[in-house]
Structures are given as C-alpha cells and as structure tokens.
Length: 291
Image (cartoon, rainbow, N blue to C red; front, side, top):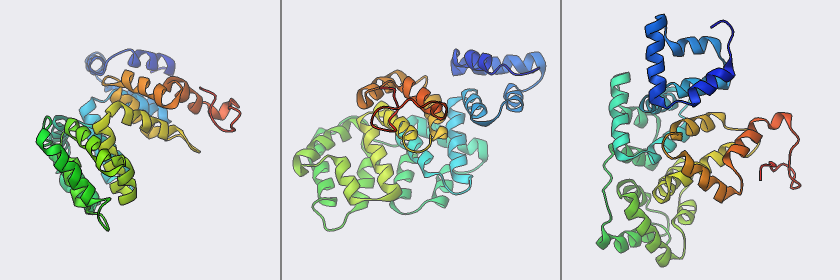
C-alpha cells in the first residue's frame, strides 16, 4: 500500500460477508502474490489492526485462535473460554475441537485441563464433548428441578457436581422448562441460587450456560454492555463479540440491548469509543448520554 486509507478498508470489508472477504483474500494473492492479511498487518496497528484481522479470519478459525490464545497466553483468559464454550452449539463445539487439533496438533480438552481445575474444569470438559441432549424430556423436568433444589438451596453446602452435570448436558429447551419449575419450587430464579451457592470462574461459567439457555442474544447484549461500562472499555471483548455475531444474531442482540439498557448499541459503542474526547454525560454524572 502507498499510504493507508483506513476508512476505505473499513468500508470495503464491513460491507462484505466473511465468505466474500475470503474470496477477496484469494484474489489478492492471485493478483499480487502476497498475503492480504500480512499486508494489512504491516500497514495498520493497535485495536484497528485487531479488528481488521478478526474480520478477515473465517469464523471457525477465529474461535480456534481465540481459545488457543486464551490458554497459551500469559495466564489463562477464562472469560474467552466461558464465552465461546457456553454460547456455541454442540456441532460448532465439535468443529472447534477438530479444527484445534488440525491446527495445533494438540487436544483442546487436554490444553483446557492443563490450565483449569475443579468443577470449572469439569463443566468445560462436558461442554467440549458437544453431546447435549436434544429436545425436552417432559417427564424429567420436575425431577431435574428438584435435583437442583436439593443440590443447592435445600442443602447445607452445595453439590456443585449436580449443577455441572445437569447444566452441561441438558438441551436449552429442556433447561428453560427446568428453570421455570425450579422457580416454583424454590421461590428463586436459578441465577440467584447460582450466585449464592457458587463463586469465581465456576459461577461465571454456570451463569453463562444458564443465560445462553434462556437466550444467546440476551447473553451477548449483556456481555457487550459489561465490556463498555466501568472505567475502561474491554476492547478485545467488544471486537470479539461484534465480529463473531455479526452474521449470526447481531440484529437480535441490538434489539435485546435496546430493551435491556434503554439505548441503542450503536450509540453506546460510539459514545464509549469516543468518550475521551467528549464531555457528553447525563445529569447522573458519568452515565453516557446515549439514552
């Protein structure tokens, strides 16, 4: 490139599907004998480079790379393990496991186990099997709700394994029925009980599984909001979610974001990414003026 028109790059790539971007990458190599992503990396930098490289990466490869970096980086980035393994379908998880082995000649399960422990590790391993049951087992709903109640609210201490086994293996449709029955039995939402009965990474993973069982778009709407609230923006999460969901359920995420947080996702992202150069705040002092 002779100079870099970042706006033109952004407009071009965001107007295409991921499949079309792969075709552009192939055509670029055919025409110029060079790798487009390598050239982009050479011209760009910072978070913009991270975003563009993410856009140029096939979805499966992106998940595989994100998991590898989460495990093999400086310390384990549990947030990425939780987000990807809780939200992907069983078939997607199986594809991720196979692609990980092909790319790194290693077992994703073994790598995860090498960096995690306890019930948190066990639930991750269950999710990595990609063997969730399908459909709703009507005759098991009440028994499952009772089992969760006995494992938590009714028990002195908590039988974490009961939560891990059930939430890791039942289908989303079945779990939603179980959650309703649990509420009638205990008087609590399952999320409330998880927060009281567990802590740390296990709590975060169990809550992610529950939220994804209820609604994956809502889970990601909340993830995006969390990434942008507080002292600084979690740019990596913001990029990862926007890129990976852009052709999946982003319109639903936008709709749920507006419903949950009384403002548009577009406006909040714009405000937070530019908040260093604006004093636009509401009278509450520090709340973005995007409402």
